[in-house]
Length: 326
Image 1: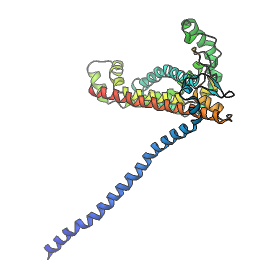
Image 2 (image 1 turned 135 degrees about the vertical axis):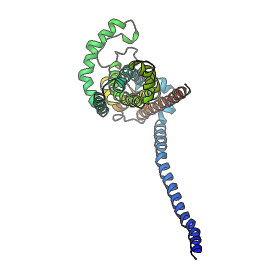
Image 3 (image 1 turned 180 degrees about the horizontal axis):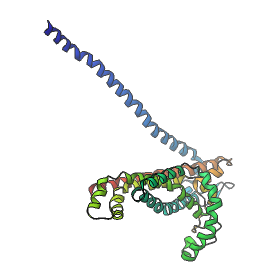
Image 4 (image 1 turned 90 degrees about the vertical axis):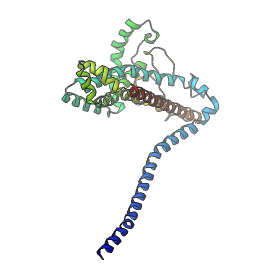
């Protein structure tokens, strides 16, 4: 009898386990479906943005076609619209921001991660993260009262006296300019470059440093020849993230760039960016063609941002593969 009871109990055990397994399986499927929906919303939002911008720019696409990208005239009265001055201003200010910000940001990240005492590093990192949360309009106000006069009275004369033979540094400087827009963007993207690069450098395994030091390398040689190459992919990612922020920045650039829809080779001349044009004119646009032109400007900026992020992903992937092969 005890033997038969034991056999019956063992026979019934699988029957009790199967419903539980099925319930768990159903729960896994439900969780999988819910998280899939959450992930799909990212694609849906992106597709909706693309669709709305593309359809909203229908009038200008039909009238101007590809010439909208190469046109240099922006005249809402005559209904003549060309985006090239705005594309030029956006790319120039973003390039200036990277030229100024990348050396400062990466250098500061290396110091905070590798050379600074732990207390100093943590304290400065906290302040840098606070700077990333400052509204852009505050940066614009500070730029008007501090950065613009400094560039006009000190930086521009210095550049003209040393590099004035180049077209980039010729002409009269009135303060508000492409250089001012690029400079304030450099200040705004610094926290992103420093914070992300610092975290990437701190994530490098300690064994890499110890192995280099054990071979007789100095601390700086270890940092420059071992740690920085190991973290190259993450540093590049931080730079492209900063570039994406610079491309779409609006208020601070609008306040200091000069808002002149012309192409000027000199960085001392005023310019215009895509985001600034949309912010300045969208509320005042009354005609359908003018609104369509502004929407197409937004569509162009959207495509530029996607292209930049795609290039960043490819570059990071290539760098990671080369580092792994090495």
